[in-house]
Amino acid sequence: MSEMNQDLSAILFDENTIRNRIFDIGAQLSIEYKDKCPVLICILKGASLFLCDLMRAMTIPLEIDFMSISSYGSGTKSTGVVQIRKDIDTDIHGRHVIIVEDIVDSGLSLNYIIDYLKNHNPASIKTCVLLNKPEAHKIDVQVDYVGFDVGNEFAIGYGLDYAEKYRNLPFIGILKEEVYS
Ligand code: PRP
Image 1 (cartoon, rainbow, N blue to C red):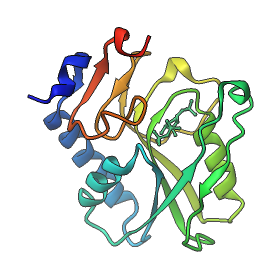
Image 2 (cartoon, rainbow, N blue to C red; image 1 turned 60 degrees about the vertical axis):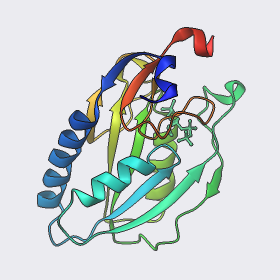
Image 3 (tube, rainbow, N blue to C red; image 1 turned 90 degrees about the vertical axis):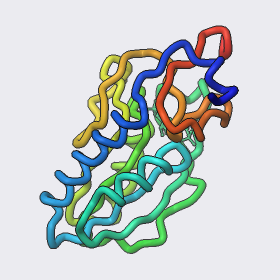
Image 4 (cartoon, helix red, strand yellow; image 1 turned 45 degrees about the vertical axis):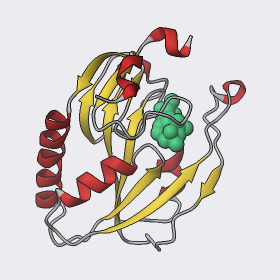
């Protein structure tokens, strides 16, 4: 057992549950994007594990790219203004884009990314998020494919971090409050 497990109050989704859900989403995307060669854009760092498993669950030709944005500080949280640290390399003009995110909390990051990528005139943009926190949304954000809806617990693991740690846990757990308070 990992020494990180002692920092968890519970396991939210174990490895099998995650694998099965991603297999289903991958199968659905493979049908809906047949002959469209979609570009999967992974939002670093949290969505890295999700991308790796999702793309392997897809059976159609596709391309991948990566984007990194800065977290907005608490002072700018309500505006959703973020900065792009790493832009995509792919020309997505006329392409079918699927944004791959680990979690939608307030929705401000994803909303910013959608608006930004729309300026490149893709043929379509959809979003695929592993965890969605509907109660935390601050805006009406476009969430098309969802792994799991979750409440307001502090989810970590499978790419999700607390202070950059826990991303390598192969499952998703809830961080004990005493660890972050
Ligand atoms: C997390 C997550 C989303 C965003 C969600 O990224 O990956 O991008 O926060 O929050 P929001 O819906 O309130 O905007 P983070 O900045 O922690 O970066 P990381 O993926 O590198 O951990």
